[in-house]
Image: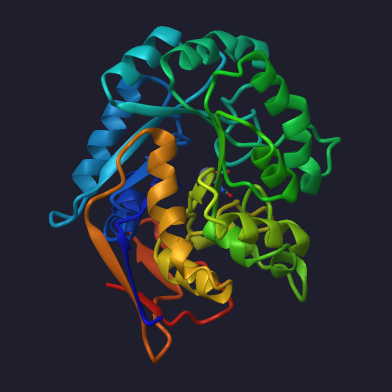
Length: 345
Ligand code: NCD
Ligand code: ZN
């Protein structure tokens, strides 16, 4: 196959940041994607519907004039989140999901949830109105090994929440382990998972073998090869419960290339080109559209996009910059360690 036309994709987990960084990174998403679930972990976080409305306005103001893009806003769940505010935001159409960060799990998560009992009134209201909860599925206990934090979260947090509130729709975000994949596959309802581009491509060796490579460090951290293979199998399977959430998370290079570097891979520039390469490698190009354009809207109760995009396989590898310059500083682009020939028109 040398050309593939699919419905315009959506990104179901994206960090756009704010200010200069927002201006610099948004066009890379909006030129290919019609919609994206926007992560609320700004400083300070997006905690109320009015915060989300103001952030949405800033995103739309930063959009290039000739791009059509719909930011799907989320709220950052805190122990003080008001169920009424969540419900009003959802009913007005502004709020599409609420994001649960266990406190301390990742970048800007200090206001996250420590005691899950305190979040139950909001979760109960969400279950009642059918608003999905997006979860960063890692426990934060220092006693749990970082490579085991996803599996521990499923057992200690996710499964208990699902037993208490089986009607709550939960998106397990950026699944990185076969434990997560199996847990989703074995569920009968109300659970789906997003998978990032980079977790389909790298395992933990990329970060640690032959030198420490901070641009491959993200959270949840990439795991061993057997887990990557489980993610690849799920993403390319066509199973409607799995879909793309890039988790593209730009940080300026000085903050990543540091003695204590930030977590996040910046993939919005080359995500579709990389994914076409990955799906072709697994003989699954015919299922790329399900992963990037169909399964996500199905889960979120939206229609898939009517517009189409065409991916074309070129003779020469497709070029993109190693890093982009922003007013906030340089941001290194995710290097998949292969050269994709797939160009997005
Ligand atoms: C994200 C960020 O930088 O905001 N980082 C990351 O490694 N994915 C936060 C997150 O989604 O965990
Ligand atoms: Zn993220």
